[in-house]
Amino acid sequence: MSAMFKRMASSVLAIAGAALAAQIVSTSPALANPGADGYCTPPHELCVYRLFNYVDMQADYIGTDNDFRDDSLWYWDGDEMLPGAETVENRTSSARNLDTSCTAVLWQFKDFGGEYLVMYPQTAYGDLRQQAFDNKASSVSWGCP
Ligand SMILES: [Ca+2]
Ligand SMILES: [Ca+2]
Image (cartoon, rainbow, N blue to C red; front, side):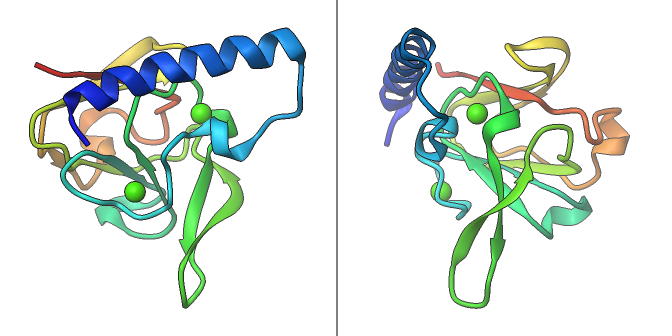
């Protein structure tokens, strides 16, 4: 994975979104957060967590995602990570940017609106209350050098 991949993934997502809007097909979890597997894997992912200090349910973002309402929070079932029924929307209380070169921006609203929190490469916030961003994140964009 690379910075180039992130830009390509964003384009693919935009195309997939347009196709969905045109056909009005049922929502697909695979498209809601492309590339997510529930595992937070360096060096190219942003990971968001439901509770402080990087615990409880989590979600991994490898590319830009304009709407967290269709993204599952993942949980450990004892053997593997599985997508749960609860969505990421307004439920992030800590976050880590595991990417070594790209910057992620968390946004208060879907489609990159409202207040925002810049997460530079390898930045971690264990308590988003300190950034006045607890339970606010609703979309994420990426910028690569
Ligand atoms: Ca999504
Ligand atoms: Ca992952």
